[in-house]
Image (cartoon, rainbow, N blue to C red; front, side, top):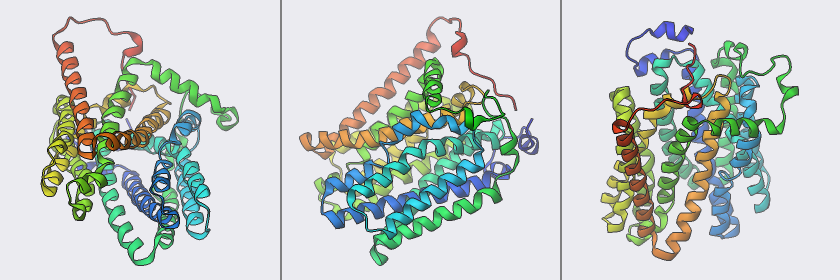
Length: 430
């Protein structure tokens, strides 16, 4: 048993107990700073590119460049998450982001170069996200893992709101380039926090089943691809990955249309509230489901919460007044907490030594969906209108949720069958 598990015992997990886990408060702080700075940077770069070019297409391309290149990193770099020191990777990722933000702020680069810098950093994101998630799994005792993940998700939602608010104020008062310098400073602070908040034991714990003598020398680009193929060949892992990928992709597709949707409602002054409804609802959902629902209830709520997400978006077809739309989108966003019901299953299904790469693969699919979903939604909105396109994404989400209900009903009522060896959850030692 780990020292953190011994400290917390077998009592029901609470936020206080999660925060007592050695290293977790520091990891939570670094995660919050990273998301805040990233949100601020996205806003500042969009303004910078739009002001210099006057092109909405180039501004949206800059936004997409932060997501789509993650596919490359997810299939080439993520195996390093289980080979290199977590502290080195976390500090290195923050340093790379800080350097990129400083270059974007200080150098008057052409738009193509700006997009290239954003894409380069995005390529490495799955690696750093994977090692961060794996580090949380190693820090937290098993009984506190889901609640700890809930806290990280809540921190991300709050940081996204804070980043947008701070970013809007900074860009308005100081301009886009000074705002990017603030981003660079926040990432530098993360670099300083890594060695002071994460314990040394992380670097001494064995990782994957690789030779420990020279993991760097033995690493090849193809290692990530081979391990990803092995992970995707496991039916349980593959099923959970699609469960974590599909609903957020559809939901972000609807969320991305808030600018034209607000214009269609003739409520452009309420755009800020419409945008804020999504992270605010996600924050509420994680608090309610993560803290006040037991593990069994979290599992049973997976399909209903996915349906709730879809219903929230589908109401856009009725074009309710702005504030009513804000309330409905907030309610629908709370359904994102469905992920809490299967996060422990995902961790248990991944073999020891591959957690970092598995979380990197999870992040790759999620971020790719956040790049592809808005593009597809925009193309559809140009044909049928923003409200209809938002509702279409919601309707598909409801259908997906109903298939989950049907699958669970069939599993509960159907005859039992032997579980194949490749489908058996992997029991992690604590």
